[in-house]
Image (cartoon, rainbow, N blue to C red; front, side, top):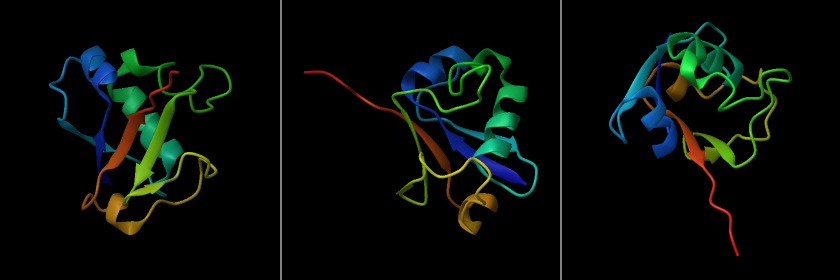
Length: 101
């Protein structure tokens, strides 16, 4: 399944694409956070360890995942994503959170 992925500015710089560019990733079924991130890291090895921890594969702090406008960051990694994301009509969005005082 071809899935569209949008990355935050700092990750776009790592993969050397203009900010706002949507990547098209061939994710395995069922389309879920894990299959998208596995395909993304396979296509762009420089991202390994930036979105997920190397050992635990847990989401890095200060990154959030969105699908169809819903925050799915805390959902289990194997939960199937909405059909609109799985079919490529809507993107899987990775957002870098902002913290400060």
